[in-house]
Image (cartoon, rainbow, N blue to C red; front, side, top):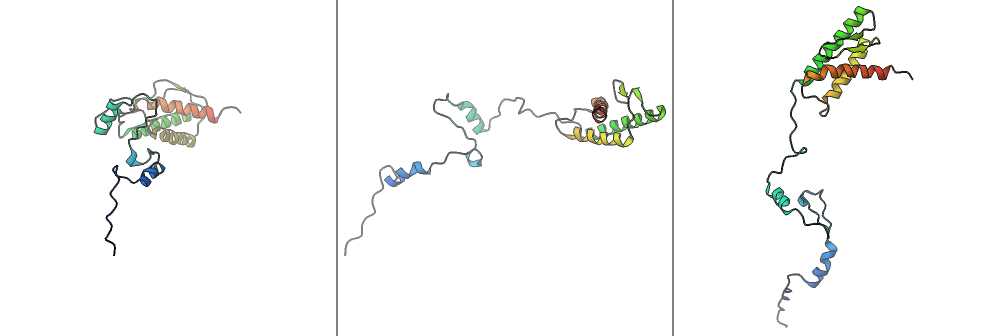
Length: 172
């Protein structure tokens, strides 16, 4: 019987010739959608050298300089929508009482919480005013439309009413 054979010694570079030829076939382009490949820094041949300092600061957790995208936006009052709702309700009540007092069209009126007089040249039914108020509150509730405080909401609501009346009652 033949003596047992000793295993083949490993190649000097650690991989067999077959593995070396198969290695390029196993390459997958990195994809930044996968968590384990983030942060992904792509450097193309011929590009200027990568910003090593910025990369190191991100990897080490150092803070970046504040800019418009990283600065936190000021938070509005937690009761802001309630205040806007109260102001818009006061404006609706005032419009309704002025329309009743003048028998329909209120004309040019000064409304509460408004700095300028508003021209209400048509009669606006109370149901329509409530619909406009709900729509205004909905628009104001979106983060990008919310004012910082309620001081300007009276003028904004008055302009919104006039704008809605121009849209709803414009000649076709």
